[in-house]
Image (tube, rainbow, N blue to C red; front, top):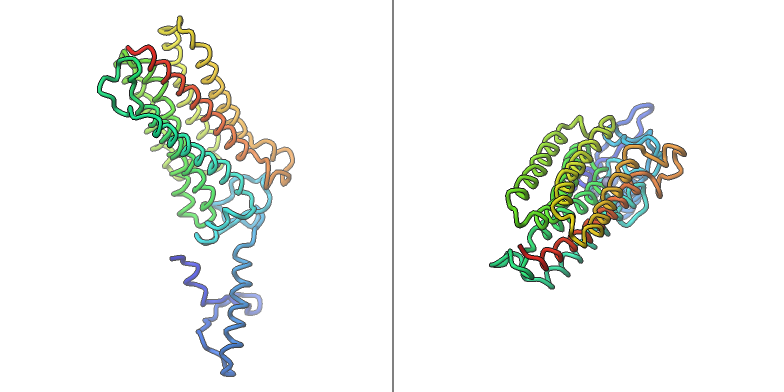
Length: 331
Ligand SMILES: [Zn+2]
């Protein structure tokens, strides 16, 4: 039930320079003309709905929504849950932020289904023999990516409803990003160090602990403010950079592996995509250079989303190679 709908029977009317409210009671028509009264109410309601769905400029936003002063117009503010939901099909400055990750989510659902239908080796009996490698680390990564992309889409769609929901959804969004980073470590670390469980346990426990620390830190409401944008990016980037340690270790252990350069290239591509994307996120380029020009298409957050997708797809390709490699060599 939408709170805004409950308020529909109360209308704000002008009282000189101040505003006051008057109650509209169904069937309350002084001339006894119920149909004309109903019509008027319907007209007022439709005008009100129209007004309710009006897009506003940055200066008209409530404080909790003032995030990027270089995006000037086409904001939704204090919209009902229902209006925010249906705005997925309309044009505003969050449309592409929603769709870039919603389409990514659908793509990853498709990849997950395709992989499930082609394999039945989630927990094979003899996981260490060639051709029989376990799939669960791969699906952990797919699950983390889907959670991140869906959480991000939902956050961008509904963050315009209220301050409380905005704060809650931002926490879910940060949790999603952290989950995607942590789960991205599972396929490479597990498959590379599968024959020396001590190492995959140490590295996976390390990155998971960093992730939990990041989530707890970012749950502090003040750290969601625009002021701490760079700090948030630094936390996520440092989780990603943690990967350098197992990557160097893996290179030393597998120096003679013929697939070394290809997998390394995919993982390097992923790192570059994530870092460039983060650069756009922090720098707020290009809208900083021409405020108002990129409100609907081309502002930094949309570019950041596209780079996140590219990074995730590179990592997916690399994960498939690690899986295939371990499937062939066994332990
Ligand atoms: Zn986003």
